Image (cartoon, rainbow, N blue to C red):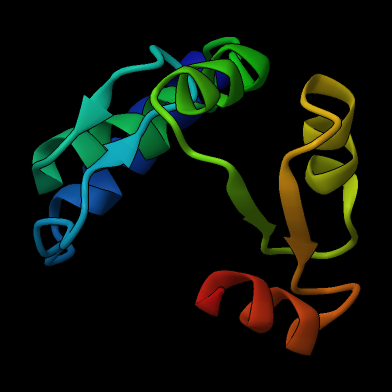
Length: 107
């Protein structure tokens, strides 16, 4: 069922102009850095039918030296998961504390 939905979503996204990302995008499906808009189309559609490897993506970011993270979305589930993975990581949540998250980015 999701395979059909993913195909339809990809077809829909094909007609939408998507600009290349300004910064590389770490795909949480294959845990690889993506740099072009075609890959982003595939990611959005593919994420519907493939397993999300969020923990592996978070661990890759940590291995590559990233130590500050902001959870953008409703709630703070990803912030809590990141704290579980790396207790001393600096983490903010836009939904929980927008000003605090902005301060974290700027520090």
